[in-house]
Structures are given as structure tokens and as C-alpha cells.
Length: 109
Length: 116
Image (cartoon, rainbow over all chains, first blue to last red; front, side):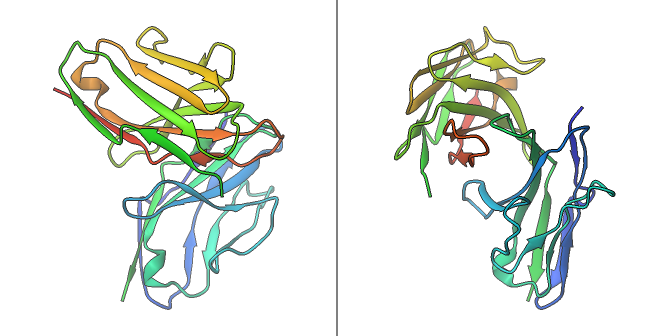
């Protein structure tokens, strides 16, 4: 069965400190992995997808198939990064997303 | 990016009544729409997958007679909560995507339902 695990419900860091939001997954095939972000009172929006291999707002995420992980990283956290972050996966194609429980990132000035 | 709207953004109803929530793709044609439910401080739980012109596919444990989904056009899907009860109170979110393989899902802002 598909499963996405985000072990931290809340992560607090100081402004300028590095950030790593953990995500592990369980899936037998070759899934697509995503990070979604939800800022306060806004809708869910795509932050990163592993097939793009790009950096958005300073965030990067590398798919590690050996460890079945897709951790989200940023070298220097900013206050505006404070939000709810969800890791998600789906099978190739247009199948539904499976979400982790989310991690609330709080960046302290 | 593409925009998905939901209406209403919030609704309060009495127990036993039915409530309809609309999900619209404003600037693209969505062959597939998904309906999620989110409890406070919890993740999104997929309820059903809706393809235009065909019956929705419900996830295990979701009552299809309770949560009626209609996807009559490429820009509109509706979720009707029938005979609502307080335990149906939740945040309902839809997302939409085009048929192209690997395409992005775009999310609506959600609808908060409170059943008294």
C-alpha cells in the first residue's frame, strides 16, 4: 500500500538557520513525489516535484530511492517560509495523490 | 497557474439537510477532479475521484450514497452531502487536472461545512 510518513508535526527554526523537513514513503513501484505548501488562509499549492529537479523559493528535495525518502531542504530559512508542508506521492499518470500528515514549519525571527 | 474555485467557501446547515459544494476549473478543462476531506490539524484524505461523464470512484469507507459526486462538464464537479450530520462537519477540498499524463493537480480553496 502507498504510504507517506512525515515524522515531525511541528518544526521550529530560527531565521537564517537550515531547514530539513523529512518525508519517507512506502510504495512498490516508481512513484512521483511532491511537496505541497499551504500558507496561512491560502490554498494548497505545489512547491516541488521530484521529476523537475528544480529549486523553488530556495527549497530543494532529492529523491533517495534506497532510503525511500524525499526530504525538503533549505539552507537559510526565512520568516515567510512559515507554513504547513505536505509531502505527497502518486503513481505515474493521473492517479490520486496520497498525502503525508504534514509538518508545520515555524520560522522564528 | 490554473485556477480552481469552490463555492461556497463556508456553509452552516441543520442536521438532516443536504448541502451542495461546487468545484470549478476557471481557465482549463479538467477531465479529472478529486475530492478530499481534511479534519482539523490532519492531512487530506481522498474521498473520491471524478472523471467527466462517468461515475465517480469512491475510496474505501466513503459512502457513495452519502456523498454524491457529479462531474457533468469539463469545468464543474459537485459534491452533495446528503442528510448531513454533525460528524460530516469538515473542510472539503477539491482538485482538478487535465488528462495529460503527469499533469499537475490544482487545488481549490476549500469549503468549510458545519452541521448543527
